Image 1 (cartoon, rainbow, N blue to C red):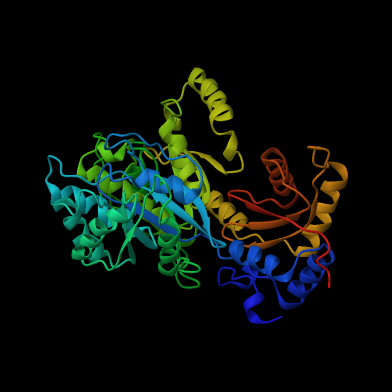
Image 2 (image 1 turned 135 degrees about the horizontal axis):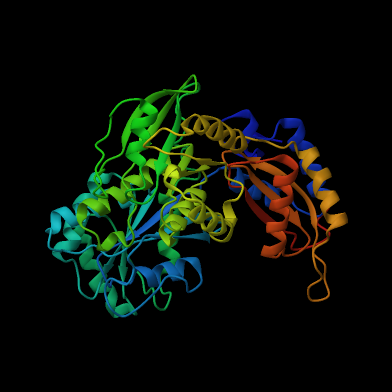
Length: 489
């Protein structure tokens, strides 16, 4: 096998298959009727870790959400014939020409009471910061506006590859309008009709040239460096108080007014006999596009801090009910692929009645992350803060866990024998074999004889956790279905 056939992993030997293991795995794949190219592609995609990110940006009502629906091949992004419907950034997974990537649909950039410089700068610089490439959507029928020109300056400053999409070009007559957009200085405008699909394939070919094959792993830093911990949560749950408590001194301004933290503050802190790099972040607010510029900026900085972290400690205020905001923040941490610890703050304020209802809320609202270590703390008094480090260490250990291929396939064989997939349409799909293609978080590729339903995938994940641990980490499972039999040579 040549080097290109090996999954990319994450730069550590436990994130890759060794030579002998890979060769043995490929023999197994060929026996089951998968060709080498198909298997290598699946392992490569899973082993790369986080997918490249494409941000779709532009001012309101230029057709961003329509374009996103066209790219992902289904109608998911909300589309209405009025500006500003998309408020929060929404992420979808897409595939084009055999390559997978994430698409981020953003709210429109527009002039508001803070002035164009403040509003556009706050959104552009940090929405684009987390992306590997940008599709800048302009309405070809309207032409370049002052807002478009302002966004161009900021995109140039960000230094990310930009593909210029001239939208609403429904026929050859509209291509002349698109040609005028050369004046923006971003290179060739790609004439597209997001509504009808015209020109989107050519544009996506350009997008693939702009996106990296595999993005750099931004977390971790140099080997042996401090592990990075992001403290996240909605405003006023006590993130700054917790940072001050673990640091043993006042490092961050604490105020009863929610949202006083604007920028993440990185702090090297000795805790539990080790040095950690804690990042205190501004609280994530709902509907950030409607918030003032500083709050929008703060929420994007939180997302950027999460990207750089290895483990997220999500603070929840136990004196209040678990909110949709809390769940959204937890989902954000899980989808970013970080290890996760749930810290229930203000525990010293609980009475018996509230404690009873809180436990019911946790059971009902947070069932999907019951694998995350939980600590009950008080940032104000320091209660149980010593339990934070073991919880973080447990989550990081789960995040880095690797299961040998032989052991995994013995386990999968037992599952198939004891709990076969339900029969659907007269056929019974089954898992043929699998491997762990990467860690941080653990990523598995299962090869199957047919489509595996979501419920069965969840069952496999649950059994994986029971068998191998993975406490405190998301587990990502992708399935490749054998399309044809008889590929053996």
